[in-house]
Length: 236
Image (tube, rainbow, N blue to C red):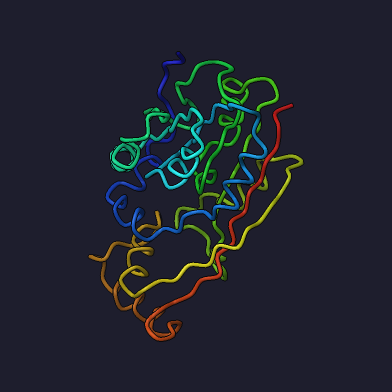
């Protein structure tokens, strides 16, 4: 096993204290997107879900029975991941980073990251993909695009869409509709779950978030026409 645990500690701690809100409010992924991922994979493929978070993607992938390594550096996220996956015997949860997963050399057929690529050191992650990937392994970035969200993160990090565009050279791109409805409570939780979002204890937080909800809701619900994007490319 590759035993170094490195990576950007500031990034790995960004979601500390946000895991429960992430579980309850972040959108999942449509069945059609998961089916598409499996069509890209070889038979009996071994998967690595890098930056697995609370297991939103991991749990869906596991339904097909393939062996899955779920790599997550943040302890709060990993505790929820463990809880979600405790009955799924085909998942092994790994404490590691995108840049140093601790996975064995040339052991993985499909390397995935969901909502996470913007947090990675792209060059180091690409090197890690070549290290852990089998010959011809496929790398996939999957993320949910919230309509109208063109904000720049407060710490000027790369957004996941921008990081995805930079990381891949000639990807195959597919998109799947994934509409989501938010109650007021769930909308508040969604905003708390965003890494760069202020906390509810911050001055003016509730007034700002409530103003958005009050402006956009219809009959107590906000509908967001989210689209799930999948970028895929084989290692050359």
